Image 1 (cartoon, rainbow, N blue to C red):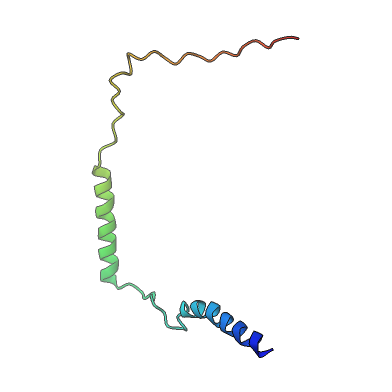
Image 2: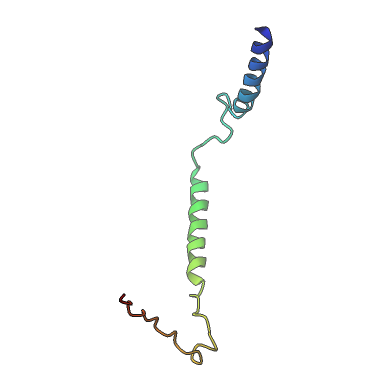
Length: 85
């Protein structure tokens, strides 16, 4: 009986040990603190600068296909008439 219980307990411990290691036990690793007014201003200025930089990027031009006018248009695929038996 003991030969079955001890390996089962060890296996259970090994399976749950990694899950328990991921818990912070009440210690926040990334605490959310309120931002100071200076940080809010800095963040707003960075967002405004980002928006201004995005607006300065020119629109993407259409691709230039040098063979576009030379290639014939794709022929329309026609259905063969149904055969009667």
